[in-house]
Amino acid sequence: MKSLARESGLMRAFIDDVDLVVSTAGDEHEITARVAERLSALLAAGYRLPPELTRASTERHLTYPLHIAADGSWPLASVVWDVGQRTGVHSHETWGVAGVYAGAEHEVRYLKPTGSAPAGPLTPAGETVWVPGQVTVCCTTDDDVHAVEAVGAVPTIGIHVYGGDIAAIRRRAYDPATGEVTWFVSGWDGVPGD
Image (cartoon, rainbow, N blue to C red; front, top):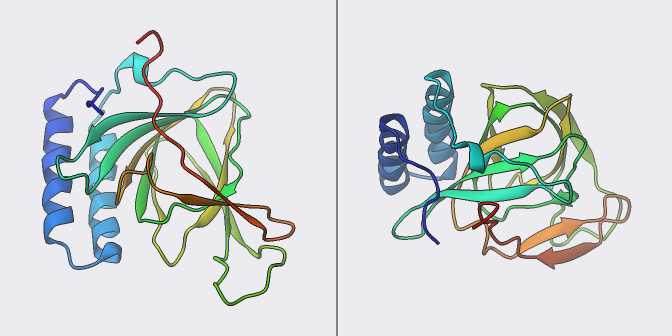
C-alpha cells in the first residue's frame, strides 16, 4: 500500500520520530506515551491533512493510510467519521494512539474480557469526548475494547498510529449486551476517485 499523504516537513519529522520510537522503546506502554507526545506536537504545530484524506462517506467511517513503515511495524492513518456515525464495540489487538484533527469523538471504553471469563455483558469503563488537538492512547494489548461516535456538527477526523498494520490485523467485534465475539479484518480505504 502506498503512502497517500503528501509529506510536509512536519509529517516527515513525525514519521522519522515514530520510526525511532518504535525501534528503540522498551514496551508498548513506553511506545504509546512517546508517540502520544509526538502526535500532540504534530497537531499543535498546525499540520494539515490533504483534503482528499479528510472526506467522509455517508455509508461508514473510512480509514485512509497516510504512511506504512517499510518493515510493516506501524502505520499512520486518517480515520474519518461523518456526523453521527459510530463504530461497533471492537478491539485493536495492538497498541494505538489517536489524535483528534477535526470534529469531536465520543469514546466509550469497556473492560477487556479475559479468555477464561464466561460470556456476559461487557463492563463499561468510562466515557470521554475528545476534541481537536487532544490525543489519547486508544489501546494497548491489555486495554483494548471501545466504541466511538462522531458527535457535533462536522465530521470527526482522527490521526491514528498503530503497532501493526491495522488494516490486516484480525480483530474482535463485541456484542456489548452478551459479550459475544465475531472476528473481522477492516482493510484500508482509498482516496475517493482513485
